[in-house]
Figure (tube, rainbow, N blue to C red):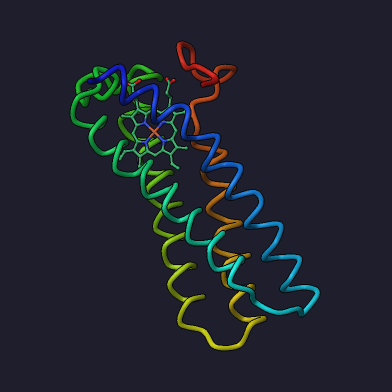
Length: 144
Ligand code: HEM
């Protein structure tokens, strides 16, 4: 089960990243262009939220079963990365994306709806990019 979850969590990063990049480009474009808010936009932002929440659920399970999470080995860069840095960065990013989605949903003005997604999803995307264990940064991490 552990290996299956790591593979799912690792591969799903690409779906979450692609959806986030498209959502940020669309929302900022429509915010700046002062154009409307469509049902397609709503679905895109919702699927993006679902993708990062799925990562959150798998990540939480991994946090309790992964051998890379170990509070007694915090002097080691890799253990500290997974135990503290990856998890904290991702939790903050997912909280921001969730706030952006719900505030945008409650807003009535189409430009405000797009602006809230653009800002909150944009900051979330940057935090996620910075917190991913990229193979060139964290030894042993994979691309997929
Ligand atoms: C959008 C959010 C997230 C993304 C894109 C993401 C991505 C990744 C990636 C790419 C890996 C490396 C897998 C590999 O070695 O091939 C990983 C590992 C891990 N993630 Fe996340 N993650 C996210 C959120 C979280 C959260 C919220 C938690 C904890 C609550 C978490 C806990 C872990 C743990 C414990 C590992 C180490 C698994 C292992 O190899 O034993 N992740 N994550």
